[in-house]
View: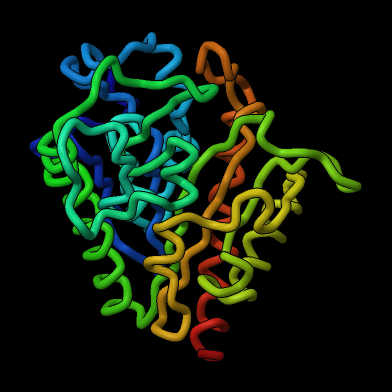
Length: 294
C-alpha cells in the first residue's frame, strides 16, 4: 500500500516521497516519518502479526493532513516504509540484541529506554506490545534497512535543512506525528488534541512554539506542551536554535481524524488539514523574530 499522492514525487527506490514547492518561500521543512504504509512482502513473511496489528504503530494519514505544505511554499518529506519496519526517529543503532542471531557492533545503543520498551530503530514490538518477529534476525538485515531507508531519509532531511538555512538564514523543522487517543490523559484543560514537543524549550525558541500553539488554539484545538511527548531523536538531533535550526515535534490525537481500529479517515481529517495553513503562516511569521533574538 502506498499513501495517496503524486507518484512522480516518489524517489526511484520507493523509499521516500519528497514534494517540493514550486517556490520555496518560507523557512520551514515539514516531515512525516511514520505515515508510511509500504510493507515489503519479505517483512510480512517474517512477522507473526497480522497487517492490522502492524498498522497500529502507523501515524496513518499524517502525510495527508500536511499535504498542503508544498502549495504554501514548504517542502514535505514523508517516509513510505512503515515504522515497524524501521523507525527513523531513533539513533541509527538503537537496537535490542535479543532480536538478533549474531552480535551487534560494539557502538550499538542497546540499553536505552526506547530499546527496553521494544521501540528501537528496528522495533521489537508493535500495536499493544506484541512481538513482531517469528525468529531472530541477522544483523545484516538491520544493516540493509539502515542503508536503504534510514540513511537516505536523514541525508535528504539534512540537505533540506542546509538549503533552508542557506536560503533564509534559518530553518524551522516541523516533525509531524500522531498519538493513540489512549496515550494521553486529560487534565483540567481536558484531553489534548495536539501535543507540541520542543524538549522543554531546548530545540525550538519559545516564540515559535507559542505561535504554533496560538494558531491551533484559535482554531479550537486543545494544545499541551511536552507531555507526554517532548520530542524524539529527530527533534533533539536537528534542533539547535543557536545555530539557526528550530525543531518542533507535533503529535496529533488519532481519535480526532480516524477510526483507530480500521485506520479509515473520518471527517476530522479535513478539519485538521484546514488548520495547517494558518499554523504554517504563524510559525513562519514568528521565525524572523526568533532569528533576530539568536
